[in-house]
Amino acid sequence: MQILAVDDEKIALEGLVSSIEKVVPDADVMGFRRGDLAIEYASKNTIDVAFLDIEMRGENGLELGNKLKEMYPNVNIIFTTGYGEYAGEAFKMHASGYVMKPATPEKIKKELDELRHPIENGSSNRVSCKTFGNFEVFVDNKPVEFQYNKSRELFAFLVDRNGALSTIQEIIMNLWDDSEPDSHISYLKNVRKDMISTFEKLECSDVIVRQHGRIGIVPNLIDCDYFAFLNKDESVQVNYMGEYMTQYSWAEYTNGALEEMMSKR
Image (tube, rainbow, N blue to C red; front, side):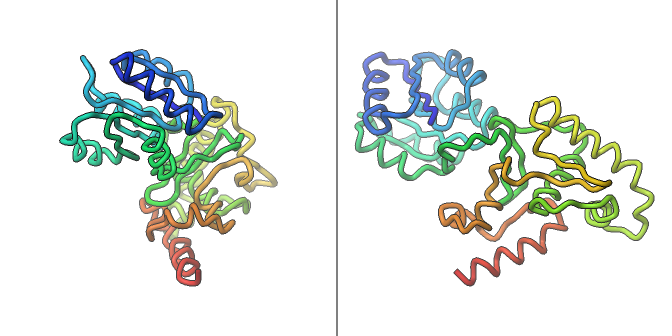
């Protein structure tokens, strides 16, 4: 677990880092007294949890938290402060937790035990997907940028297929949903090429498999809430709130299947 701790007061920072290390001695904990140095470190290292003091000279913890969320949408932000009036602002940005100073080991443990975004310990997969709610795909915890929006949708469709290979016709009928599939073949070729080249540039093209004109993904190489749900991971199932890839109409069938599975738990 990679943990960031930021407080511009030396004694407060030392106490915060010490408390964190007592609770999770195996974690990598980095402490900073300046927000810009914390951001520089985060740009080169994946961050799972960030403890941020709200009241700091210059850039405050709320601004720093927003920057970290832009870099890592699933980072767990936990604010530390001696002032209770900031709780509302903290929760507006969907922070994972809120600690009133002093940041004792007991308070730290309580927040780490109730993180908003579960941390996949020991996973070596660089590619991860979020399917509950809107679909998102990440490499090294950073959002993947495609040239076309349809490239993201194509990858989402392959994730939904859970490793089953799909033909050009199957993809077109789902992504375009019309009666003239041949009119989209040229566009699909560009979309497929963009998707493949994007993962090649990120050096993780092995998540995509092609065989006899069909294409799919390798589920074992991708961390995904949908896959974990199907594997009956209860810690993931509780995060399903009846929404699955909500921006894609073709995902409604799978969403119905997930709802039925939840009703039978």
